[in-house]
Picture 1 (cartoon, rainbow, N blue to C red):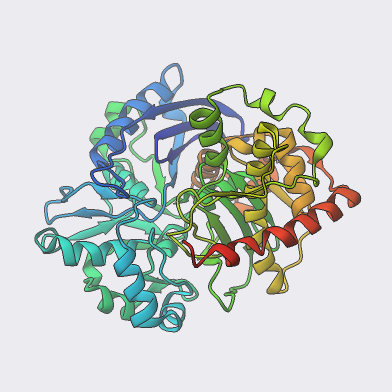
Picture 2 (cartoon, rainbow, N blue to C red):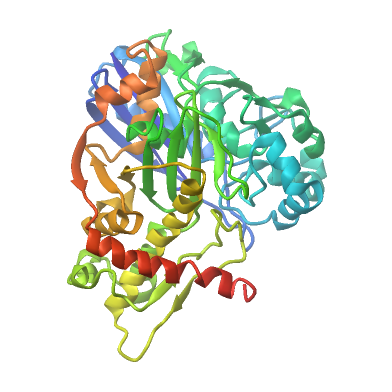
Length: 486
């Protein structure tokens, strides 16, 4: 049978058709707008997502036998607040993960409610992008909209609802709401009380690989699907990407260099670091994971190339850089949109440091790539302090297409870096979850072992890793030095 993975991103939805053996049979994408009604605000219309998904599904299945599709699942942008009224109509545009309007609400949660209380209730502290601060903002600033709430959803769950008529979410995505008791996999009564949320507003909770329903009959007929086509809960984009790279089970790691950057460490046991510098979330395989999230990763390089020096020839800008790895005297703080892990500082900003009259354009380009890699290592150091020991990591995302960046990551983290055959991350992971939901595989780990293939390995070079150790020891002093200025 075939399976569909729907990756609901920030700029576009990507839909993937996968055969039961993991073969990717077709991929299509559809873009939709993002709105910035005020400085620092970021919103989208859920109706735009649904229109794009419907059009994408038709295009995805063109030329294929839709009757062969046994299941559908999702990966999706996390944290976004979708609110529905009693008639399941969207109340206002969704407030997205990268929206920065909730500084006051985030500070109230962390400083007045207290980080210890938050961590005890949810295993996490408040970040500006999380869902709970957005709810508090709506309660304070748009009380008329707050009064209309009948259901609260996450972005991908709105698409699942449109497909099935079922209000559902999964544990991995719900972990980023600051409303879930992550360790015990239930809604936190204390957090609901603090945020003024009725439990009836919240969707039913499922494991990512569990069926939540089937495609509605009229929609199934319209798309040519069987009436019993299964819809599985799906996962947040990072957890879905981890499934798509085989980062499941105990002690696996994945680094993602996308618009944002993450280091994702899967675990069979629940862990929380003392500073809550890393997110402690449930994983799509039914277990747990720790994740460090940078708000700007490959997007730093894109900003530099496209907006500052004005070129699309990324490879040419990296030419000759390999000869000077570990020797750059110019550093870059990659905080163009503030920073989440491990600093939790929305006021942090990007910064070049250490330039002189002989600093070149190439030095600055290299500093950006290294700065992002050092930022990933900041979170890795927190994980190591918990006793986590790794010898390898998978890598994905647009930045991972650069052989030079893969080499930097290998030597800055001092880990073997493995590149997998498919670049489809969340979409592939979502299709794999659908396959597990339909019984094609007995578990997510079994699906990953069967489908995910490593095609390239980059080993760290001891001499270069030693150089980068010295460089990192300089880098890690920079943020504490300039923090007060931010």
